[in-house]
Amino acid sequence: MATYTKIGAVTVGAGGQAAIAFTNIPATYTDLVVKLSSRNTAAGEWHNLDFTINGLTSSIYNSLTLYSTGSE
Image (cartoon, rainbow, N blue to C red; front, side):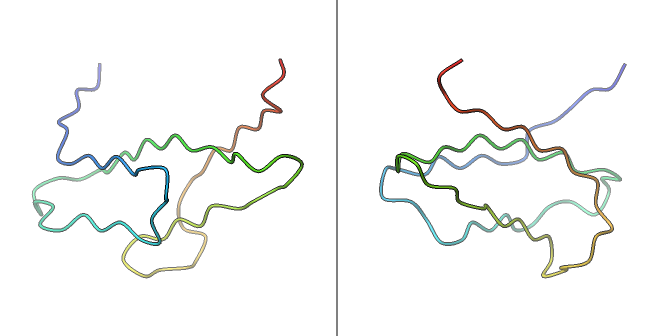
């Protein structure tokens, strides 16, 4: 069974935030798990959330995307 150690957390207020940086992650760790919860309050609009690690834009990371209309 995997165990996790929280090394950081950020709560963004209603105004949003352009970027979040986690620094000083110990080099002794072999895996990084990021849990993200977001929402869009603009009715009828679709928005993407871009997520980049160390400035890399390649597709070397696994991802899972869940969508909801909020009405179900």
